[in-house]
Amino acid sequence: MITNRQFILSVPSWVIPGTYAENLRFLENKKDIDGVELLFFMYDDEIKKQLDSEWDEIVSFSGRFVFTAHLPERLLPVHNELIKKLAPIVRHFIVHPDINNISAQVKLLSDFSETFQIPFLTENTNPGYLDKLLPFLDKNNGMCMDTGHLLLDGKDPANYFSEYGNRIKEIHLHGMNREKAVIDGRLADHRSLRGNEPWLAELFLLLKNYSGVINLEMFSWDEIAASIPCINGNSFF
Image (cartoon, rainbow, N blue to C red; front, side):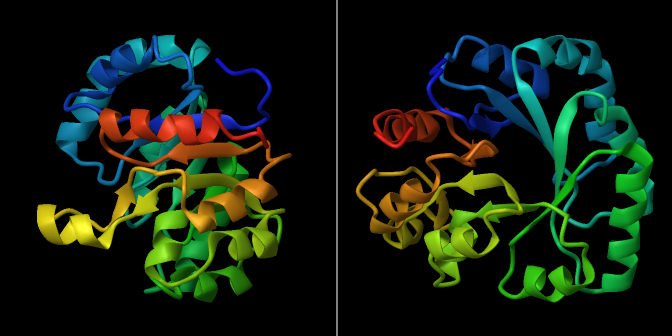
């Protein structure tokens, strides 16, 4: 691992087709990777069965990786079971803002935070969603900054970090390529970093003393491997 950087370099728990354990085994010898974000965009019986069957092996990797967890798209009281299971091994949880019932989500986040004594970071997703939720959250509540979502919304990640940097504990770092999206039919974001993006250079200037998590949120090891040199070769780290 690179030791002169202060942040934790993380990747999703799905970088190759396979289960949580299969991905962790694949990542174990990737020396640049410090952490893994366990993905639970949904939590149904199939995911629960997989998690239970691999739980002991997942826990065995907690000495190798700093774990975080991405909770389901819409956080619900029933996810208490999942949070209770994960809380002993994760640094924090990532939550998408739900503006359908802001008061209910604020109460749920407050209850979960108090019960499990662990941070729940709200992420900027759809344009304006987090903006509507933030006024109702305590200013001590952390945030997750997603660069791809900002770029798609026409916002500058460096400006966003300047505004909220004291609250940002995790960054989902990925690029955008609208031209490729037209060709391959994939999302325009969650793309490899090329290293010559002006927004990226401006953001790196602000991350010199950043000690949170930087998650290369791409769902392909090839794309992540292509992006790592942009970070390792940056003089600010």
